[in-house]
Image (cartoon, rainbow, N blue to C red):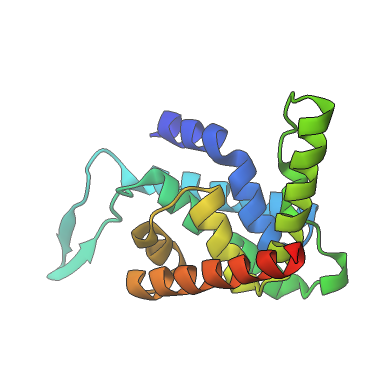
Length: 184
């Protein structure tokens, strides 16, 4: 299981940092959130033991052992999100010190002309996304940047999948109209 956890981390570390950064608005707090989430996960994994799930009887009372997550990636993102929310609530950071989650995007090896066009497009997208409400930015990050399905996003955010799909559709329409306005 630790190998699975490490593989998911390596594949998604920049996306997890972006999710945490969106919530905390601070690079170091986002990194702390990821570390806290992993510490909790490792601790929880130790409690899983060898069985998938078990119910034991102790003096006539039933207790339930935790189950292994069905989707490690979704479990990991939900843990990072929760840890970032915990940190944000405890620190009450000033929104002026927010850091863009776009800063972690790798630069391409394109020609100077292609790079300039790509930077212009990224700038437009960045300004639109950073102008969104926090919950909308989180939805964009989880759907587009992290590649989750509506069902997984619903599981992570503890919202219904239909609500997520509707919000996403409306959000795309809103973003399209903003892009159209900026191009005119």
